[in-house]
Image (cartoon, rainbow, N blue to C red; front, top):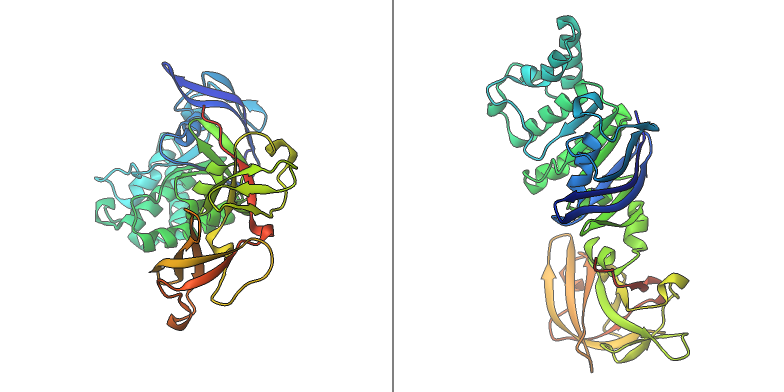
Amino acid sequence: MSSVTLSNITKRFGNFTAVKDLDLVIEEGEFFTFLGPSGCGKTTTLRMIAGFYYPSEGKVKFNEKDMTTVSPENRNTGMVFQNYALFPHMTVYENVAFGLKVRKKKKAEIKKRVEDVLEKVRLKPFIDRQVSQLSGGQQQRVALARALVIEPDILLLDEPLSNLDARLRDEMRNEILRLQREYGITTIYVTHDQVEALTMSDRIAVFNVGNCQQIGTPTEIYNQPVNDFVAEFIGETNLLDVDWKEDKEEFYSEGLNKSIAVIPPEPEMSEGPLKMSIRPEAIQVSEEELSGPNVFLGNVQLVQFTGEAVHSFIAIHESDVTLKVTDLNKGPSTYLKENAQVYVQLPPSQVRVVPKAKKE
């Protein structure tokens, strides 16, 4: 296992800056995820760790050893690509054994290590099958086995589940996490899927336009976003513009046309354009009148049934705001009716005021 330290990393391609001034420490044995939309710099960062790209500025260290310009084959990392990059004309055994043969290991050692890792990924019965005859999930496990069999210090995964259907993605999330825990290997995972990041990671780095916006545990990222981009990208939220009132003790929402009671933001967030964020599942709704702060009257515009949850869109009276509210599915008798008048409460403890993300 190795820790990974990125110090003031910047990567440019001509005049385009893909990653800017990134400082990051990934601990030994940690499952760390780079999360963000396409083109945000997460895969570029992973490739600098793998050695496929060298940074324009800054240093990459494994366990305090400078690896900035070390070639990929000398970094002892295992990588699983988005398209798996398997050899279709080879068997499962030959694909998994390939890296060990390149390292000139003895035949007996290769056989033992390949059989051991295929046992762990539950593919030993398929050892002599052509990979072209395997399902997508099985091919993904072959790619994992090939990366793990060389006993890497760091496992790198670049959107490995994006080609799988939803049910198989769920299964493979559990499989990857099981293997990571079993091997105790430092793992860096790239994805644009928030569910993957939240369910698998010890910590997450959220990227946007080449900048790391926030680093934290899944609960920190979700419950305490540092700006409106993170709040909106992680899960779902209702975002509204707010401003300090003159006494700077309350916030005013022009959209809701009302002062809002909230937990005060951190001091460094008190200047500049601000947004209030509240998650759909945190909003309270009742057909009976509610008491307390942040209560609004509205009409149900739309009800969406998703199976496990029910989403309701509620237009707030005397405003141009429609709030999304989410409840667990507890049976048809509990669903709100479209066009019904309801009371909506935004609990102050669930409202977070955040700055707008900087456009760089």
